[in-house]
Length: 69
Image (tube, rainbow, N blue to C red; front, side, top):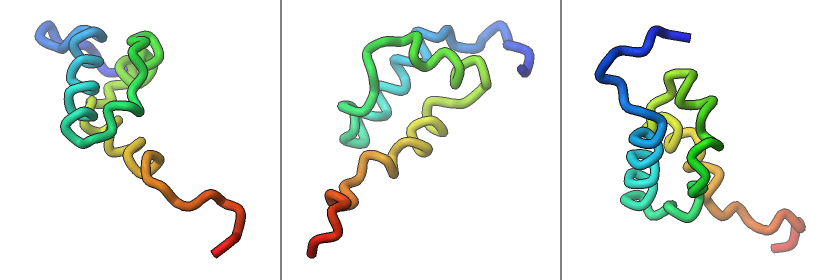
């Protein structure tokens, strides 16, 4: 894990930024209100923007998967 700089955001600040970016992108519904669910991403040095970019494709409708037309 990279060293944490003194001006690094807290987990709560990181989560607020994630929620803000998600709301601005129209996918706020995809972000849990449980901050601790994001502890691993935060501890791993993932930025809120990178986390959102990773999950954004999962929020898109890709059909029901039934194979129908």
